[in-house]
Length: 447
Image (cartoon, rainbow, N blue to C red; front, side, top):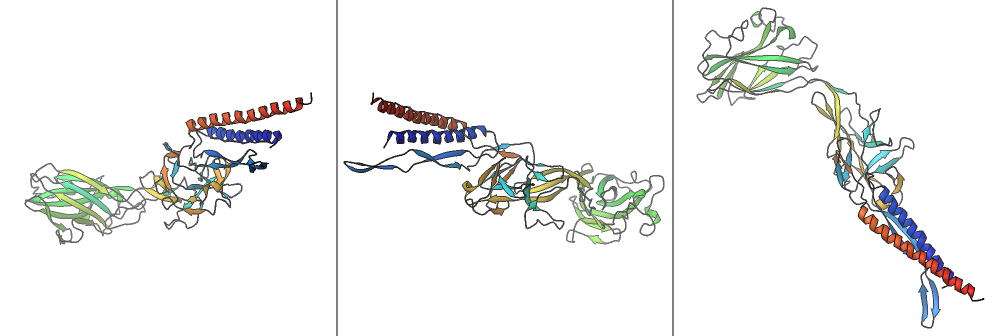
């Protein structure tokens, strides 16, 4: 092999290790880039030159070339974040984002998302995240499209249909021989509690239940609402069901309870005289019949309204243990979050939540075939194979919210590679300088 060939071998080494140092430098520069996958440099030797000797034909190498720069798609560590829209993938999947300029889909492991001024879920560069929007019928779409959240949306109220009331009535209370009087409800009762219920417009109303002890182990209940809240025309309300005075109330239901000797509810009699016991359907519900709560604010009449009376009569103070009504008021969108199944959930000011969309993830058979585009983005190529799209948990990876995937760059490993690369570069430069000295000797032969 000529001295020129030896020098070319050294030059090939300088070029290859310069590229290797560039890969190391790029890795170190992206130590804090979310979702970044570290690269590695692979080399291959060049086709050797055949030389003949007394022992036969031999081969002398001609140097080295850069074979490929691989991206190592290992799992990066997950770091917690305070943003609900910071997302990380555990597994092999990629987020799908659409370039608003080229309209092409790109792929990313970086999940630092946010909502823009139009409500689109975007990355910091403005690329729109793709997923399955939820239709008005409550189903997710079959095809992926831009995820857009109506940040000014409201949910309407839902009328109450059930009140769950758990209370104890003091067995030691005195019997009220005069019975309950609608014009003096507090004095003529032994105990009272007020429930908050909702109409179909999301307005709140108060229903007060008065308990009056009428005999040994027997109690009467009377339920009232402010007269200003409902239409009090007769029917359905008889004159004796409406109190006098400025703060008039209207009785909307009445009945009686009977307890056994152990203080447990054994029988209910409603205002129509119907008797119910533990063998009856929907025990121990009592009902405010249809038409009795005809709200005057325009809300629809969602009746009957059932009260589940978990009532006991023990020798302790009368006390409400729990009291809860279904239904809710109207509310506006106050927060957006993502669960571990990739479902985007809107939380409203009334405490209700709604599923708004579902994220889509992509997977490739050969991730090293993806083309880097910069800005934490990849593009599919023929080498990467066709894209497979699915939802989190279906083989394309899992979603973690309030988290970001960190770079896979190991600084200690990169510094070690840097030292080896530097020494290799120096060794190849020595090949060139030594060959230069040898050529100088050849030139001096003519002197």
